Image 1 (cartoon, helix red, strand yellow):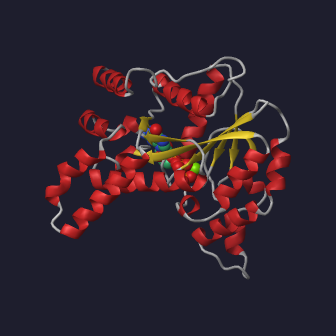
Image 2 (cartoon, rainbow, N blue to C red):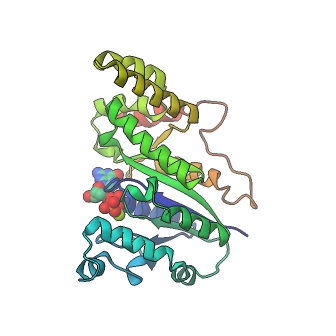
Image 3 (spheres, rainbow, N blue to C red):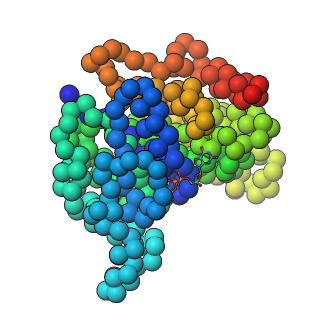
Length: 285
Ligand SMILES: Nc1nc2c(ncn2[C@@H]2O[C@H](COP(=O)(O)OP(=O)(O)OP(=O)(O)O)[C@@H](O)[C@H]2O)c(=O)[nH]1
Ligand SMILES: [Mg+2]
């Protein structure tokens, strides 16, 4: 029997630890057992019970205080993650060998871990060797996605993580509860966007022809990968959390031995319908 993993990744402060605690509570309400592993050696606050904590292996503060290493916070974190990659045995022992496990990994927010450093890819390969089916859950803060140029750069980071990790990836916009009704309406078009029309809408604002062409090429690239779908995540909305969970479960075929599962909205009908319902609920309430 395989085991299942959500690798919760994304920029600093995007809501990874909050997501883990919300999701694990949600799984408990569904009577499903799930555990969380903290993989952030600089973590200070999280409110979920951990089955393993990387800080038992190494802590950023200790690395920074080491007179021979002399690292700052970012270099210190990279050092910790490289040390972790050389000591996966620690993780193996902490995880044990329980079959049918469902584990969320709360990862650090340094973006270089998902763009060019090999450690996260090494972690994925190690988990796969331990028979985990791994899904990347990439979080971005909705507050930073309400403008098209910010959105394009956010998508580029998500795409870069997807290409480098080579696992199924579900992209999520967090902190939806903080958006005003107007911003919610505005962000709807970013959840399942048409990159070309977004480009057309904004091309008048770009004066430099070279920049215009570059933006067009980037939009084309994003469109070609056709992965620019985001699911809204509002920690107060159980139904929305469930839709996110169904999509993740589907991508790793959780419970396929029991029954074949399909996420609600990946049917004949486009996902937009659910987003409409989601936003309509919010406007009504
Ligand atoms: N209102 C609201 N606040 C949120 C939500 N998710 C996270 N936050 C807040 O955003 C801040 C950062 O959240 P974290 O969960 O610590 O983010 P993180 O991605 O784990 O941060 P790092 O580990 O530092 O990269 C905290 O103050 C959270 O309370 C959300 O869905 N709604
Ligand atoms: Mg965190």
